[in-house]
Image (cartoon, rainbow, N blue to C red):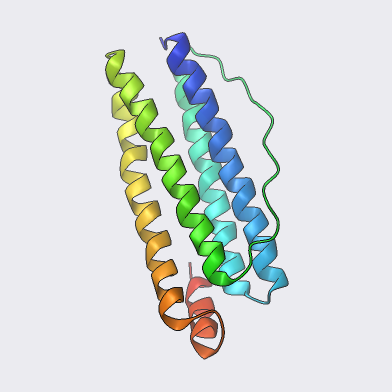
Length: 161
């Protein structure tokens, strides 16, 4: 059984994961409007992954006889500037999510909730991958700049996801 504090934080994390999906969908729409279909595709895939994260937590709360309480999802921004700025926002957002996961894990440790610790370990590892991927794409964009053939090639590469 989950403590009230851990249940509340997990519900907040469900909301954060759904917001992440909403943010990536907004970024996808922005990239489509900027004629970057590969970037848009990558963002849609990322949005689907974030919904999967939310559902993973949703199931865990229910499995532990907790109660999922859904909260309103905030409206994400719709304008992101350049492709570099899009991925700067992605990396910043993933770092924020990492911080939230770490806080959740610390609470599970404080409460000696071993099941929650084991469950959250997957998210700790996942966030390493999320930040690494966002940083790699951002660094590639910084090397090639926001325009030209190199962005076109990177767009094609991201479409393969």
